[in-house]
Image (cartoon, rainbow, N blue to C red; front, side, top):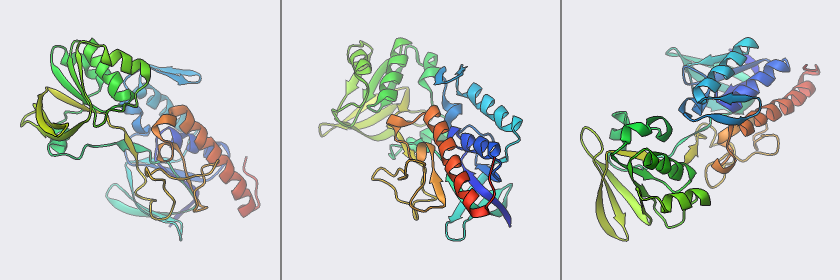
Length: 314
């Protein structure tokens, strides 16, 4: 069985940062990423990235390329196209599949950086819409919907910002939210509520997405009354959920499913650290925060490995 000191699960900014710091400190490590490329959710960012010190990227794909080059330049140990199947915290063994073969690797420390995923409505018609490829970015695809009707579902910054981008490009927007409380920042709310091309439906629950070749209607319940809203596309913007399924049985999660960690990212299972969007709520999520957490976790692990091996890491 292969053995390393540190296994990093997840190749987003947090996992990439942790891998770089393992290499820098001379720690035997391996990063496992399920996708064919590292970068995590970066590939889904279509706007300019201006908040990472020293880098201004035109979009997430450009930053993903820069991060990948960095890993390759430093000769970090990472594998893509690997799916983690099971984590055994007692024997400190990870089972994963790679090219249809199941493998195992033993570790001293695990850094869990699996990130988050978009929350779903879990209503009839949603999975069919996704399977047809009707998943859009307001930034990238706004020109496709000029003069068309679109529905944006959600009450936060992403929903309001997307509604504004679409409306300003000429779409007729219906914004649907299940309550009368909106989490979006006040500037977004003021702009949306005063925009002539945006109609806001508060206290409205989505029940079904209807349409055969594409979505044509959204069935909703508003104030106890069923309604059908015509639309050419649906943008679901109801937040994200942490991907903590693999560790939920042996680390503490909060009431929203995020991993509970201390100031260095250590969970209540001492050999397991969690960083990035598995422990950062959306209000504090970001490329910079995730990268910083990767560095902190690895530095703490380095100190513990010194005690274990009696040999300093540089």
